[in-house]
Image (cartoon, one colour):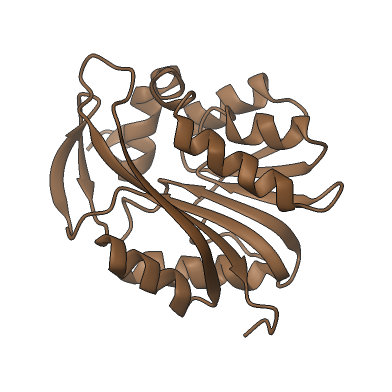
Length: 215
């Protein structure tokens, strides 16, 4: 078997998409609105984590521009290289977020934009709980997915085959709440990525806060 075939599926997908992913999604209005919502609630010089940081734009770029420190984590070496070049003020690390140690009560803000879809439901739930515990009590997290009641579904995304798992909207919200997050607001919309092989996608954004009790 070739070495490239042994890479995690998410790395294979996003290595292949590269800068096309940014072109397709960087100007999504709901994504930009969720970023604005988070930035408005961060303290000065906040410590933030961008899970599945992609090319660094728009998320890490916007956070840096607002004066915050950013650690971006992505499993795709192509994406990490692009992000490091495009947003040199942030730190980017190639890693599987499921394996990355996270210091409890250390972060002011976390972004998780569509980066759970190639994990099992159990992995999504466990990671969301770990990310919640990494937030300081009262810290904020924005969480986005494609809401659908699917497990291991074979789909084509921007011309690339991918196996996706998600929750329907109620289940995704319940997962966030079970992790210790208060869902303050949510937003649903349909977005068509700017790509010739893209189709309209339902998107769900949850704007969350870690419970003050830190449970």
